[in-house]
Length: 494
Image 1 (tube, helix red, strand yellow):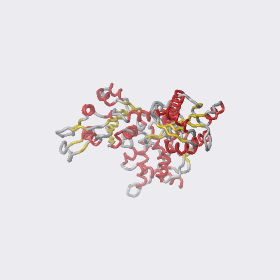
Image 2 (cartoon, rainbow, N blue to C red):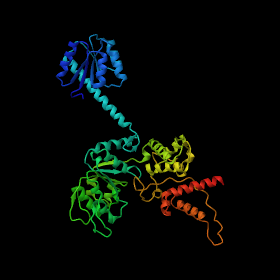
Image 3 (cartoon, rainbow, N blue to C red):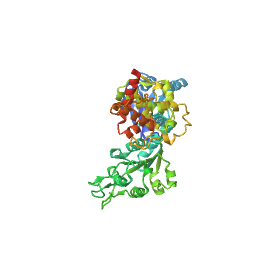
Image 4 (cartoon, helix red, strand yellow):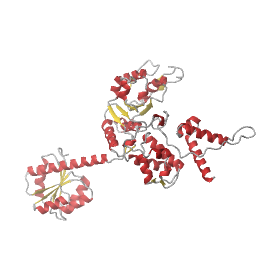
């Protein structure tokens, strides 16, 4: 704006003075309009939105100072330069107080006017950029993310910077940090957002089917191929292909993927013809990709093809008060979904959330909040409503928390949004174990007793991990939650 043409409104009730200013500025390529009264100036400013205003002080209807006050009250952000024949220190001070960026006295030379206007436009442009930067630094929401921490602001800026390019993106971070959400953000912020975003978890697909899942196959290509199948790469043509947990991809498949990345050409399994597609590849892993290269588990040439723009997702323990922002969001969402009364967290509960190291990151926090909403009710979440596992770990300093022991991590399971599982919250203290019921005359126990014993044993075996216990028993996790709630009520009543 400062170096190019601008919209300049001249507010001057003397036609000859207005024409002098118009002639001086016309040579600079600016678009010029003139208003002879304060009322006309306000109407022009509202309708035209000028970049700068040359404001005379003495106007027929009201003073230029009054016009400036009204402009400021309406939020109009033009750079105002006060022009008057009555120059004095008092006028200058009052002009600055009312929001003027500079002060010029009639009669003025062309150089004085052009330099003053140029400086005013430059200040306006810098102020606008500063507002944009501040707005970005204060964002607590971005493309599905929730978080205002510096670590997340860095992620937002990287996503915005890389989105418009064609460069491949490689996302790293612990399980549960939102790697797929970051991949979706790259796609949604890019020119490809109108085409497909196809996500594929390389660790959740059998090794012998991975090539077919990516490139597709034709009917009869192998046993079980009863019809043609379009692969993920073709489905993502023109859009984005997200390869999650790419570190799980076998080496022989990495060779085929490398050829595809280099050429953009794919050949479905069993097909005689190849075809070219245009896809952007976003990869992700919860491992150190270079360490995988050095260990011989990931091809170095493929690494350099995919690791073009890295995006590192910070663990939740390094995101400060983002923990509370996210927890409040989940609480409001789940309370509405479950018909609960929760409106917020007690201060002691928030302190416990902040103190816990969150080895399972955002996904674990999500599960903790859902656990509370399903099993508890009230206006506020009190500290005593938090899972016992969280309270036991709440005393450890968050910034220096040691990484979770491997035993605390659940084995991979298809849990959205990232299939690799993280520790689920521990349910409230389990009910007292049922005493062995005396066998009936025919030697059988009551079914309810057997059911309760098996569910509690499965929870013991999985470290109170409800989804894993449910998977072991072949039932839905919500069944276990309902049973726990029912047994808790029975104990309270009995």
